[in-house]
Length: 170
Image 1 (tube, rainbow, N blue to C red):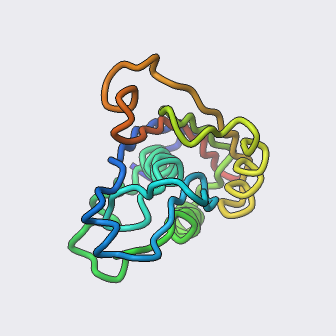
Image 2 (tube, one colour; image 1 turned 60 degrees about the vertical axis):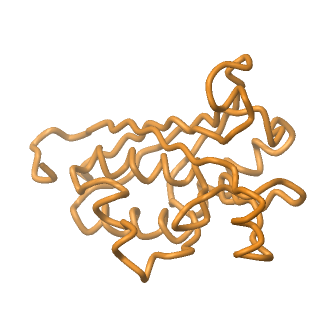
């Protein structure tokens, strides 16, 4: 699919991770919450084979979908030990490299984090700037709650929805 004659493509993605249990935190001491490529001191980390950064993972999946290069599970799955405990930044850099190698330029991405915590409003510009620097393309980051509905509303974890635009260089 990456050989499409269309000069641009759009991908969408959803990523979800539960907050780590007390037992999980005890097994991996020193682990911190990573979200939108930022550390969130004092927050419970997210479960995952990697750092659990739902915002970074959703953007990666959106870029992979747009380029037709796969999805997070097939590219960085749990059967790939070299990606165990990898950071969202590492995934974003690799996805950007893969997109460029396939002849695509990332035009932009947007991601919205859904959950009650952490409270992201004050750090949204920082998150967007960091993710943009890592991906090498503009990334806008927003956040919302789900009005106490579903697993995010019950405070069991976070979700992130992302879209990405990729273009063929002229």
